[in-house]
Length: 219
Ligand code: B12
Image: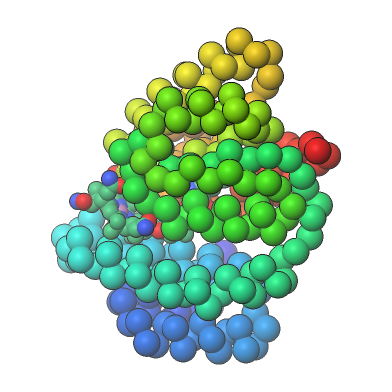
């Protein structure tokens, strides 16, 4: 869907790294009872544009750092509202989550972690730059019902593939099937089949809907 003018202004403010203006806009949107997830989605689009401007040489690394800091501040405001409004324990089950080795992007993964907890899943978040062996050890110890891998940089796709190959060996050894979902702004169908994952998503809500579809009554 094409953003409307107010939405476009919001996205552009984040893309322009206008910290004060964007935080004010977040507060006003919440005051008008807007869905906090719609705010997060627009902020995600703003971040995508920051990334493009970096890719095109208009922004330097410092802009990515600044954008991450602004997003952190946005989440500080939005998160309590998400927790308050999204409580709907319609799903259940254990989710093992982490950003794969070599990648330190965690903003999207953290949103998934918060939302999945709100929706009744038990989340074990291993953090960022997680080696394949740690995923395997935790998968064996925690016996998750599904595994979510996050990765945003091209270099992380090999790590995803290695992690998934080892997790498939655990499945073969134990006879326990663990659906594997990958997520991140650069992920698509081609990467999903390249790394051997079962599913891929690029939005938090699509991720949660998928979790619910896969694990309606896991506990
Ligand atoms: C902020 C940012 C950073 C911050 C990250 C801070 C942090 N704590 O995460 C910092 C400054 C550290 C950073 C560093 C780098 N970055 Co950076 N970064 C970004 C940026 C602008 C935004 C990412 C973001 O947070 N988006 C907002 C969140 C909410 O969206 P999201 O991550 O996509 O997550 C959503 C979905 O994808 C999904 N999701 C995500 N994970 C998962 C997992 C599961 C299981 C599920 C279900 C769903 C799911 O749900 C989330 C919520 O809806 C992106 C641009 C982009 N298009 O992504 C570049 C980008 C990812 N970075 C890029 C690069 C190149 C780098 C660096 C290599 C730069 C450098 N020269 O050092 C380093 C890499 C460091 C490393 N080893 O990881 C490139 C990657 C290009 C590529 N193809 O490899 C991008 C795409 C920018 C660009 N267009 O060039 N970066």
